[in-house]
Length: 98
Image (cartoon, rainbow, N blue to C red; front, side, top):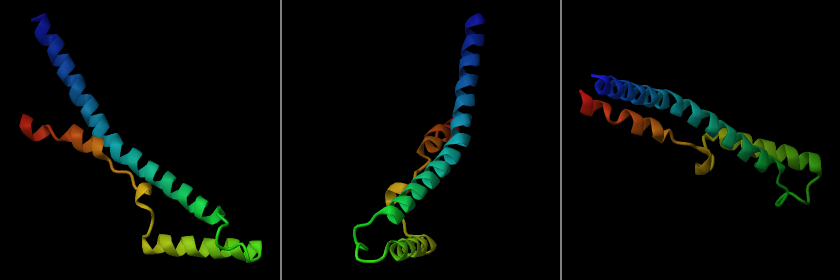
């Protein structure tokens, strides 16, 4: 009887951890995507390869406008978007248990 109780506790903890991963993964992925998008935007604004002939203030404004237009159009590098794949893995076994 004691072994059965230990296995039930172990199974319950696995289910709890799976639910925790399922809830936390999308939140973490969204925050990481925002962080990466912000880092990319800052990099785009601060680079100075193609606007060297312009005055610094005008070049900075031009970069800001270009980045803002890209973000409004929904264009961003693919590496800025993080997928919440652990949530899919932790929720996948649930139909098999039903």
